[in-house]
Image (cartoon, rainbow, N blue to C red; front, side, top):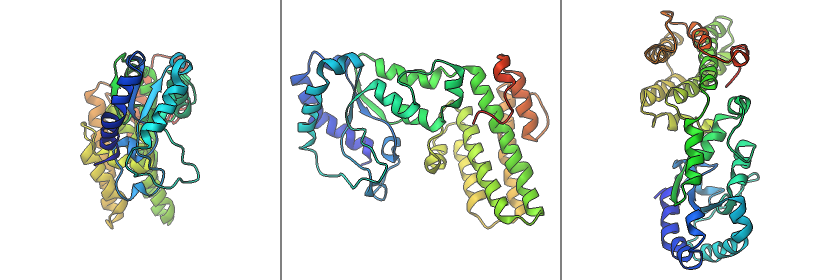
Length: 309
């Protein structure tokens, strides 16, 4: 049983009966579930990951108005409820913070995005890290009768301005080209083997970004990115497999260069099918320029080609 399943069980067995009995009027305005930082919110936790910052429970998200009305009473009720939970908790790391219990929606958004609301400008959409968005929309909502919190999560997935998405795709494309198609082999030619390894790592990072964007999803923090990549419906599993081979195998430099080109060709094929590029060039920088030409906003279009990821 992973943390999401455990959280749902605890909510249904311990939380929901109390909420129905003591907060029946407020319950339609409360969102309950699990989301946030950590492997547990992504469904990637296991026995190893539970050695730190693991806490059994769930979150109750409230509007600012509802928190003023009943937040204190609800927090006391949650403390009593959680006292009956089975003891699965682990020690805290230096920077670990709990996201279980009662929380304002605005505080949850501020903690992850840096502002207490949905993004309002293209700059907020462009420069907020993708892993921050992923932390807000991951996990699972068990109850949200009003649908307000679920709507916020849905809008974060669906409402990214198209020009911002194009800018991110263009930046990912040119950085894949620079790190993988160009600098990997060039570093080896210079005898800079360590730099070549860094180039592969950079290529993998920007490839993850590219394929998450092509799937209209947000890439999580780097240590879960390859695992999450495997779940994407559009070329996720094969791309994750290629990256694992690229990063972990003892293949020759020539064979690794072929894998890089294979991944880039896959990205080019999707970009062309989506109408985002018409170039026949296999070098991704050419496609970055093609994508940029499709950006309507002059202000965004004129940003540096590599800016945005």
